[in-house]
Length: 71
Image (tube, rainbow, N blue to C red; front, side, top):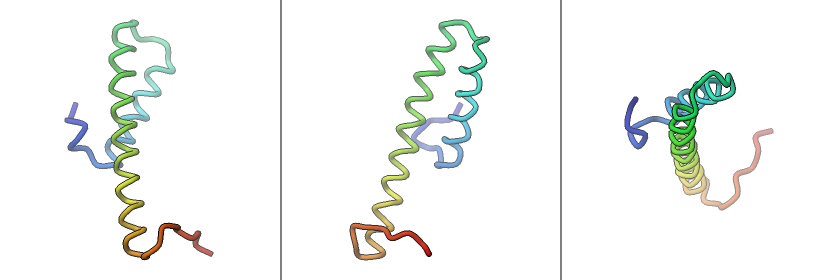
């Protein structure tokens, strides 16, 4: 497993999806489930951080605090 802080959004999201599938299967021992849950929370935080940074960049580029939907 890679260091979470080095992962791109896409890589972190893909790993998070894999972890969710494993947890939902219910086939893992408790200890493994807890470890995966913990990594999943950290991956989720990484994804949110990267999304927040992207939103800030878009806001800076558009010069506004609100992003308007494309029509």
